[in-house]
Length: 479
Image (cartoon, rainbow, N blue to C red):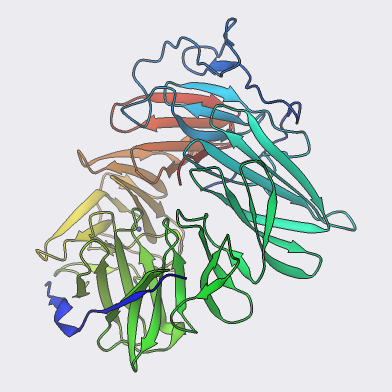
């Protein structure tokens, strides 16, 4: 077990800044031979019709493609960017080709109960059937080129929340009968039970698996070699979030003071929060999509703090709007799921209105300056925002908790709308409701418009667009 260092950042690290913010995989797949290890032909999705390459080889090489440029990245054209769900599951590549998967018929990735995650050269998928006397789970590991690495079916077992690391090792929550715990699968598919811990992330490079310790109200890690559990440094962490690297952030009372804590198996760093109460009900925390910033709120004391994970600086924030603006009554600055309050640059986002229209306002805590994000909208009762990388997704709702009255002529947009704002140029792309709703990748450069009849992939940087008729969603890679 490693020796952990504890770092306490005192009151000197806290300053006051004064100043005047997915979808799953569905539809039955035709599957394939569950013992096959060769990928199917790559298919071009660009142009007027999708055609299968007549000379594609078993390595999954992409067909020549009329699509100019590549989607969602600037380097490897054949790199995977997402898993397409709807009809037969396929891997979408940056050059707008796709590769079919060797998926067994018994692992239907288009069921809404299916769960999948991708990282590096692998993705893992699982589903379970609760309609039998004994629940049956199925789980498989696949390469980004489409081949199945291994597949397992387990009876009287429920497997959920699978994670895969870049070496192809899988960790998942598993309940066998009435016994809960975790499991890892080697690259060959051999299982190893993780007694006493339910995983909440992939196996780390040091072999530790993060998760919830089942014999007490705490979190921690289990050594996948020795199966020794290392609990978190405090017994009752509050509002725990597992980060991509398998570390945790949470609230905890340390030496009588409520603190915000970042902990991994080797180190504990904590920041005291002045004037915060230790009541878990009143505490909230949200992260920016890149996990570089955290926004903390104590509802009881109406206190706000911003934490920078890069340099450990904690700042107390006053998100009071400038003169002439008020918060929308539906909003109340709650830290709700799916609603961003802090972006990847650390800006604070508030749903606001003046006499003429509603809009998203962004506070720069360093300068105290407020700016408008996207277009103002009139005739709406609520406005919400998701910040993903360089992109803001703004949703306005005509029918909300309370009818709002606006002065006439205050905005060119009215009613229920979607806006996609790419902050590199700040231009708002307005999406009418009939054109679908947007879902952004974490990096923000690519967005899918989801409709009943399919998807449209938008590359906001180079202007590329790709239609995917019949698709239900894209599971973005490495998220």
